[in-house]
Amino acid sequence: MARGIGTSFFVMVISVNNQQSYDFLYVVNFGLMTQLAMGALWITSWFPISFRPQDAIFKQMRRFFTGCERIASAVHGDARRHRLRMPLAFHLNEVRSLPGRIGRWMAALPTAALGRGTREEAQALVNSLQELGDGMRVLIESREAHQSDTIRRALTEDVHAWRVAIQEILRHLAVSPVSEEATVLRSRLDAKLAAVEDRIESAINAAPLGRTYSEEIENMYRLLGAYRRVSEALVGFAGRVASIDWTRMREGGF
Image (cartoon, rainbow, N blue to C red):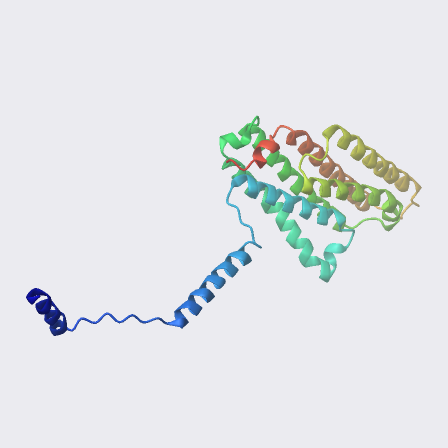
């Protein structure tokens, strides 16, 4: 009893105070912070960013072929139109710079992600993309060169058919790099180019004397060379793309 009374006096003397307080605003603030954090995560899910090399390769190849398709859709004089100048310049910069970026991502691929492919084959594929990009730039430059109106009008139908075929191929490649077979692609494009070349010869032979100058004929053959260069680059890409194990590269385990 004496120890109990003494302990109670001791607690009273030292003024022990154990009052507990609860703030409802803390609960509200915590709930708001949780909702804001979840909302931020939900918004960031709209912008998927992957630092895996294979994901970057697929994304940049899709941008590359989309840019090539936009360039192929341009007709004579589009580069001089103000409303088309900026989009065309953007796509030209895309096809110029993306092959180099794709090459760096190819070099960063894990060995396991290459599957049955080799790094030499991956570099050859990048080189074919670079050749296609150079061909698209030469095509735009050749289209803007001075040409005979008579020959250009005669070529309108055949050139349009070639351009539509190229656009279709590039759209397919933007979706899947292995969507076109090299042998079939060569037969299709060679037939289109043969029709354009025959029409050029016929238009030059039928043109009145003095109406067609050597510079205009040279520019027209330069344009035909640009068409052939783009076609050969596409066939070369289709031939090299089969050496890459795309199924293995798309796997998420690397």
